[in-house]
Each structure stands twice: as structure tokens, then as C-alpha cells.
Length: 123
Image 1 (cartoon, rainbow, N blue to C red):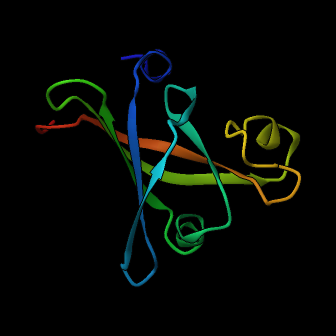
Image 2: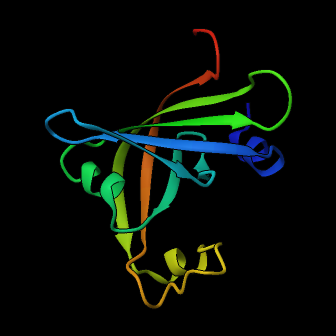
């Protein structure tokens, strides 16, 4: 499946989950990822708990629930590979109109796709 086309054309809600070095978990509502290639996605992240957790534990999970009836969507198992902060690219990707990207730190965090599963069911 082409994840770029999927996320471009499918409305829904995303939940991004991380854990710190001690295993304390965090989940937050997140926008859809930017699909870089078949093996890489990226998320914009502010200096909050999800981003902080990734500094000590590179593993994360993104759960995407499609709008509409039934339980459809994707589960992305992720591993952080790199990040860039306050770059022109990161600032240009900010979507929310109530955020001034010049006044906050914007991190563009890249992840390797470890596994992609449907919202419900197994492999």
C-alpha cells in the first residue's frame, strides 16, 4: 500500500504514543505523518512530552482511525532515526494557523517504519 496516497486521501484521527526510558507511556493526538519514502515517515513535534520521550527511547507508535463507520485505519510501529530543529523545511510544514513557527521550537522527527498493520486484526 502507498502510505503517502493513503494519508493524503483518508480523513481521520491519529494518536502518537511514546514511552520514556523507564517505560512510562504517553499518548497524544497528532496530525498525519509526512511520508518521505516507503520506509520513512516524519512528524512535526513541539518541545513536549512525546518529543522528550524520544530522546531516551527511540521507539514509538502511531495509531490512525479513519473517519466513518466501522473500525478502519493503520497502526505504524516506528523507530526514530534522526531529527532536525527549526529548519526552513520544518517551519514550512506547520499547518495550524494558530501557531507561529517563528516563536516556538519546531522539530521534524524522522522514523523508520518497522511494521504497518491494519487498525484491527493481526499481521
